[in-house]
Length: 62
Image (cartoon, rainbow, N blue to C red; front, side, top):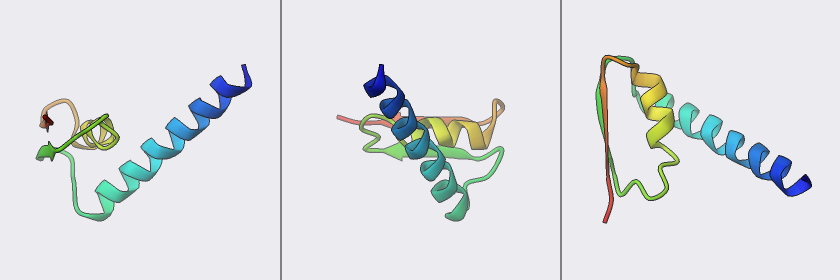
């Protein structure tokens, strides 16, 4: 149970840090975003939250 709580806390921190970073570089509601080399999607989900339901986030990886 302790590992699950720790993993959740780490995942939340990564998402929050990712969202802050994306906002800092100018990602805004309504934009189209390409997450090139998305890997596990650490920026993809936060980007989708920022741009909103009427916009698009493309995630591309190998």
